[in-house]
Amino acid sequence: MLGTQAGGHVAVSSSRAIDAGRGVTEAFRRRLDALSGSLPAEDIALIGSQAGALQTCRAGVDICREGDLSSRARVIVDGWAGRAQLLPNGRRQIVLLLLPGDAVCLHSRGSALTSCSITALTIVKTAHLGSVRDTRPDSGLQRALRLEELQHERLLLNHLLRLGCLAAPQRLAHLLLELRDRLKAVGLATDTRVPMPITQECLADHLGLSIVHVNRTMKQLRGMGLVDVEPGQVLLRDPEELIEFCDYEPVAVDAPNPALSQAHVDSPGGRATLSMRTL
Image (tube, rainbow, N blue to C red; front, side, top):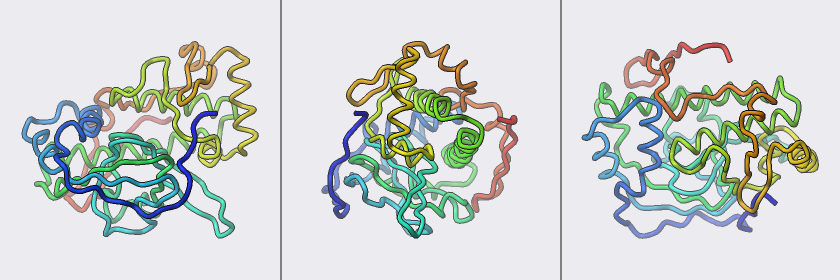
């Protein structure tokens, strides 16, 4: 079993205000560093000073609802969430997994990402980001925040590639490698160990497969000697062979991305264009 969800859909509960500080937002700082290079010291200090009270959401609770532009910007401190859309029949498609260090409810009004709800897939702790998005438009922090939005869009393109071009075993392998790279960027994974706190149901909703198919596919990768599964994590037994197996090309999240660095971002309204190589 890859992970178990806390049961029940309960309301979001807020803890009393605490000194979130740098420790709470460290993963967020690392995420922005990975996109834009080292942030200026004053921006790092601002992130720490603006971090507010922690909120805890149980699995299944919406952190931000579809089309809601009023929710305050937050950063995931612990746990996993997903950008998802629901069909009238109740079926769910998770279009993007959100990990510690990812910002939520931060995207600009014109972004298509606001059309998705953000749902906690595990117990999720988030910290309020205060007025970080109200800093001057030409600051290093604002540039990093806009680059993060572009990076999420690029991850969505990567996911379209998985769904459209890869068979189930390659699809799962490709996702595991991408998760490894994203989590390594914030110090939460190694070359061969990938935390996996979500259930096979969540993986199925993300990969467009049934739960039975996800289970069968994971067993297939294990039988090929590519992965092992332990409680709460997946071990990549031969990362290089896994990369070759699914033709994985990393989305650059653990080092400054030259393509992203050349992004042209218009005024603070948030419209942006990105020059990047074909996936």
